[in-house]
Amino acid sequence: MQGDSQENVAAANEAVREFVARRAGRSWSREDLEELDRLRRTYTQAVRAAQGMEPQPV
Image 1 (cartoon, rainbow, N blue to C red):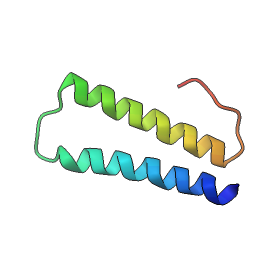
Image 2 (cartoon, helix red, strand yellow):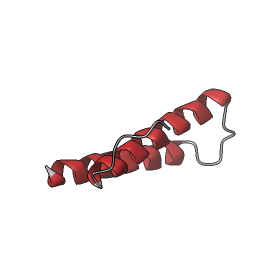
Image 3 (spheres, rainbow, N blue to C red):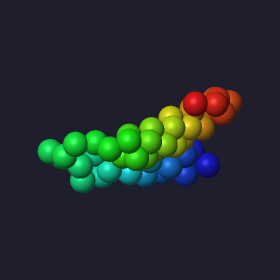
Image 4 (cartoon, rainbow, N blue to C red):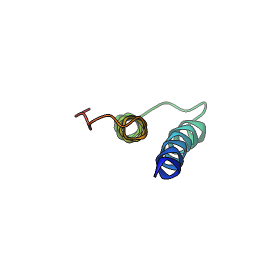
């Protein structure tokens, strides 16, 4: 199970990185910022799950 958790963290991290990289040099729209916030929440939840922490609302 720990391997799956770490894979989820890595995938969520990569999604954030790819999203930011695609917007390099561009202005961020409100929709972009909302999507970044959603991706960050997903990443945070994956990290907490990997650490065995209770899910927290973000």
